[in-house]
Image (cartoon, rainbow, N blue to C red; front, side):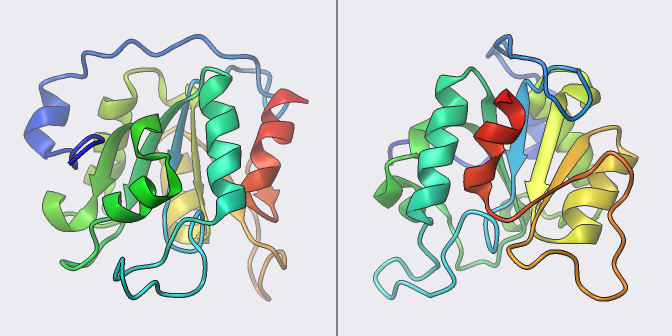
Length: 188
């Protein structure tokens, strides 16, 4: 199957052979964002199930944004909680973006789910750069913002309708309505 297979814990801890490219400074903190670790469901996927794929397809606008970020030198990782039936690669292939990702950290094959600290350690190992140069992007405040920030990463919460009642965005986190907003936020 084209594209990278899911990362195993052994493969990550053995080190990643790919150097992380240089990237522009982020307006969020003035430090460069070199790696984007992106969630799948609710972040880059559509809300409906494609019955041929047997999972949610990639949102075309999210795919376009990821292509732009990749062309800008940002290394992409997929970091997603998955069920045994969710492979993610068929949807990424259908969208034509499977080759953009350095690695896929999928919870089911790894045997660890967000917000387990081990998953974020694996993300950092796959990133191959300091935690402060990794931007974790997802739609879950606890799993995709608070936990990554506790590991020293930066975070962007994807919420088209903003924060939910009772939620508070941690200092330094970015709130965006859609993944398509990331290139402008990082290249402003």
